[in-house]
Image (cartoon, rainbow, N blue to C red; front, top):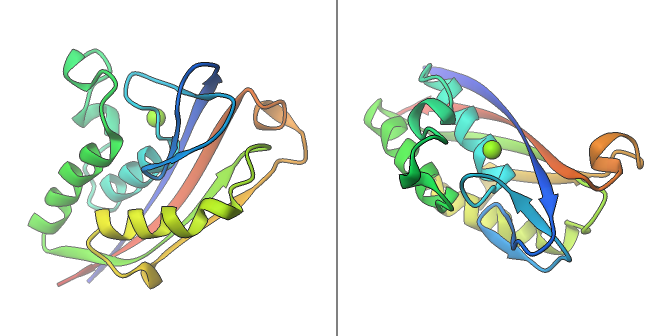
Length: 158
Ligand code: MG
Protein backbone atom coordinates (compact mmCIF):
# COMPACT_ATOMS: atom_id res chain seq x y z
CA UNK A 1 0.00 0.00 0.00
CA UNK A 2 1.25 3.46 -0.89
CA UNK A 3 0.14 6.96 0.13
CA UNK A 4 1.08 10.29 -1.44
CA UNK A 5 1.17 13.75 0.13
CA UNK A 6 2.18 17.24 -0.90
CA UNK A 7 3.33 20.30 1.02
CA UNK A 8 3.84 24.00 0.44
CA UNK A 9 5.13 26.73 2.76
CA UNK A 10 6.32 30.34 2.70
CA UNK A 11 8.30 32.40 5.21
CA UNK A 12 9.39 36.02 5.19
CA UNK A 13 13.02 37.19 5.34
CA UNK A 14 14.21 39.45 8.14
CA UNK A 15 17.66 40.70 9.07
CA UNK A 16 19.21 39.41 12.28
CA UNK A 17 17.74 35.89 12.00
CA UNK A 18 19.69 32.70 11.21
CA UNK A 19 18.75 31.01 7.92
CA UNK A 20 17.91 27.35 8.61
CA UNK A 21 16.86 25.27 5.62
CA UNK A 22 16.28 21.54 5.92
CA UNK A 23 17.84 21.63 9.38
CA UNK A 24 21.07 23.11 8.00
CA UNK A 25 22.23 26.62 8.99
CA UNK A 26 23.18 28.51 5.84
CA UNK A 27 25.31 31.67 5.87
CA UNK A 28 23.24 34.61 4.58
CA UNK A 29 22.62 38.28 5.38
CA UNK A 30 19.06 37.49 6.57
CA UNK A 31 16.98 34.63 7.88
CA UNK A 32 13.35 33.52 7.89
CA UNK A 33 10.78 34.70 10.42
CA UNK A 34 8.14 32.55 12.08
CA UNK A 35 6.81 31.34 15.40
CA UNK A 36 9.26 28.42 15.22
CA UNK A 37 12.72 28.54 13.63
CA UNK A 38 10.85 29.12 10.31
CA UNK A 39 12.56 26.26 8.45
CA UNK A 40 10.43 26.53 5.31
CA UNK A 41 11.67 23.22 3.87
CA UNK A 42 11.09 21.11 6.99
CA UNK A 43 7.62 22.66 7.42
CA UNK A 44 6.82 21.70 3.84
CA UNK A 45 8.07 18.15 4.37
CA UNK A 46 6.10 17.87 7.63
CA UNK A 47 2.92 18.99 5.87
CA UNK A 48 3.54 16.54 3.01
CA UNK A 49 3.95 13.67 5.51
CA UNK A 50 0.80 14.70 7.39
CA UNK A 51 -1.08 14.92 4.10
CA UNK A 52 0.02 11.42 3.12
CA UNK A 53 -1.42 9.90 6.31
CA UNK A 54 -4.54 12.10 6.29
CA UNK A 55 -3.60 13.91 9.51
CA UNK A 56 -4.24 17.54 8.58
CA UNK A 57 -1.38 20.02 8.77
CA UNK A 58 1.50 21.25 10.91
CA UNK A 59 -0.59 24.05 12.44
CA UNK A 60 -3.10 21.54 13.82
CA UNK A 61 -0.37 19.54 15.55
CA UNK A 62 1.83 22.47 16.68
CA UNK A 63 -0.38 25.61 16.99
CA UNK A 64 1.46 28.92 16.58
CA UNK A 65 -0.65 30.21 19.49
CA UNK A 66 1.18 27.75 21.77
CA UNK A 67 4.30 29.23 23.40
CA UNK A 68 5.74 25.71 23.62
CA UNK A 69 6.57 26.00 19.91
CA UNK A 70 8.11 29.49 19.99
CA UNK A 71 11.48 29.29 18.19
CA UNK A 72 10.96 25.50 18.09
CA UNK A 73 13.48 23.36 16.21
CA UNK A 74 11.51 22.25 13.14
CA UNK A 75 13.64 19.08 12.97
CA UNK A 76 12.17 18.02 16.33
CA UNK A 77 8.64 18.78 15.08
CA UNK A 78 9.23 16.65 11.97
CA UNK A 79 10.60 13.81 14.11
CA UNK A 80 7.42 13.93 16.20
CA UNK A 81 5.25 13.65 13.08
CA UNK A 82 7.46 10.91 11.65
CA UNK A 83 6.75 8.83 14.77
CA UNK A 84 3.05 8.98 13.83
CA UNK A 85 3.90 7.96 10.24
CA UNK A 86 5.88 4.96 11.54
CA UNK A 87 3.16 4.07 14.06
CA UNK A 88 0.74 3.81 11.12
CA UNK A 89 3.13 1.28 9.58
CA UNK A 90 4.61 3.48 6.86
CA UNK A 91 8.16 4.26 5.80
CA UNK A 92 9.52 6.64 3.20
CA UNK A 93 9.30 5.60 -0.44
CA UNK A 94 10.82 8.82 -1.71
CA UNK A 95 10.46 12.55 -1.38
CA UNK A 96 11.09 15.30 -3.92
CA UNK A 97 11.35 18.94 -2.84
CA UNK A 98 11.79 22.32 -4.53
CA UNK A 99 13.08 25.42 -2.75
CA UNK A 100 12.27 28.79 -4.36
CA UNK A 101 14.69 31.62 -3.62
CA UNK A 102 16.65 34.24 -5.49
CA UNK A 103 19.48 34.16 -2.95
CA UNK A 104 21.42 32.57 -1.36
CA UNK A 105 22.57 30.03 -3.93
CA UNK A 106 21.39 26.69 -2.55
CA UNK A 107 23.58 24.38 -4.67
CA UNK A 108 26.53 24.26 -2.22
CA UNK A 109 24.16 23.17 0.59
CA UNK A 110 21.91 20.64 -1.17
CA UNK A 111 24.05 17.62 -0.23
CA UNK A 112 24.02 18.48 3.49
CA UNK A 113 20.27 19.19 3.40
CA UNK A 114 19.52 15.85 1.70
CA UNK A 115 21.63 14.01 4.32
CA UNK A 116 19.79 15.76 7.16
CA UNK A 117 16.32 15.13 5.71
CA UNK A 118 17.19 11.47 5.08
CA UNK A 119 18.28 11.07 8.71
CA UNK A 120 15.07 12.70 10.01
CA UNK A 121 12.95 10.41 7.82
CA UNK A 122 15.01 7.30 8.77
CA UNK A 123 15.76 6.78 5.09
CA UNK A 124 18.70 6.50 2.73
CA UNK A 125 19.84 9.70 1.05
CA UNK A 126 19.01 8.11 -2.33
CA UNK A 127 15.31 8.41 -1.36
CA UNK A 128 15.55 12.18 -0.85
CA UNK A 129 15.80 14.73 -3.66
CA UNK A 130 16.05 18.46 -2.97
CA UNK A 131 16.34 21.03 -5.72
CA UNK A 132 16.26 24.80 -5.83
CA UNK A 133 15.16 27.37 -8.35
CA UNK A 134 15.00 31.13 -8.58
CA UNK A 135 11.74 32.66 -9.76
CA UNK A 136 13.51 34.80 -12.35
CA UNK A 137 13.36 37.86 -10.04
CA UNK A 138 9.53 37.70 -10.17
CA UNK A 139 7.18 37.83 -7.18
CA UNK A 140 8.01 37.88 -3.47
CA UNK A 141 10.79 35.33 -3.82
CA UNK A 142 12.23 37.26 -6.75
CA UNK A 143 12.23 40.46 -4.69
CA UNK A 144 14.00 38.53 -1.88
CA UNK A 145 11.14 39.21 0.55
CA UNK A 146 10.91 35.55 1.48
CA UNK A 147 11.37 31.92 0.49
CA UNK A 148 8.94 29.20 -0.55
CA UNK A 149 9.21 25.43 -0.69
CA UNK A 150 7.17 22.57 -2.14
CA UNK A 151 7.38 18.82 -1.60
CA UNK A 152 5.77 15.60 -2.78
CA UNK A 153 6.20 12.52 -0.61
CA UNK A 154 5.47 8.84 -1.23
CA UNK A 155 5.01 6.54 1.75
CA UNK A 156 5.09 2.74 1.59
CA UNK A 157 3.47 0.34 4.05
CA UNK A 158 6.08 -1.77 5.80
MG1 MG B 1 5.89 27.40 8.07
